[in-house]
Length: 258
Image 1 (cartoon, one colour):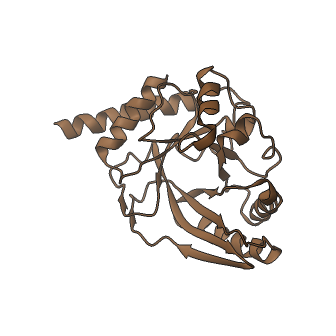
Image 2 (spheres, rainbow, N blue to C red):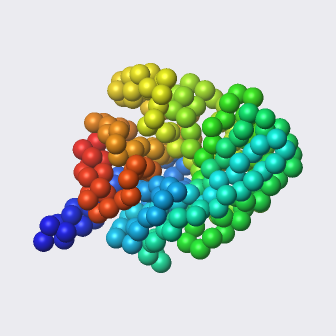
């Protein structure tokens, strides 16, 4: 009986969240291009995950498909090594992590090799969007801008491109404004040095200045928020493998925001 109750709670909250997102006013994010991606997406990082229990109509999975390591003039790719189990109906977001070593030349050859890997993972079964996860220093921004332009050129126009974004990029740094992407996910966990500024900004009920950041949020189950902007797609990270119980707890936390 307890298991049935938890599943019913997950479904009811997910339906509520879906309705909120679907009715959002135009101009508050890149909803049109990301409409094929559910309003709640669970990040499945590099560990075994069995997510066959999720309600595939309302919950998606963003899985780490692989990591590109840029060092010197090399671009090495490490594919996902841990099993991921989902139902055939689950909508997937292929996530490619890019890591740069201090000696990375960020050459055109590296750019093209990275684009090859992103393109290849975007065509995997059930994938409805591509997400690129990177940390761009000021000196690396030209490289990432050109990489995203190359990826956009290669992928079908129907395939949305999402990136993870430092919260500072969404609040006061305008460098992502002209990127050829459909969504920038503000990362609201592991904030580090800028934590107080970000929490103060959100606590004062101010929205992100960058429109690309107004359609989604990135959170972690071990850093709960009492309140966050409503009507956003939520990407959720868990430091432990997902379970029905942890998903139910997340759903109730989100429900309290609205």
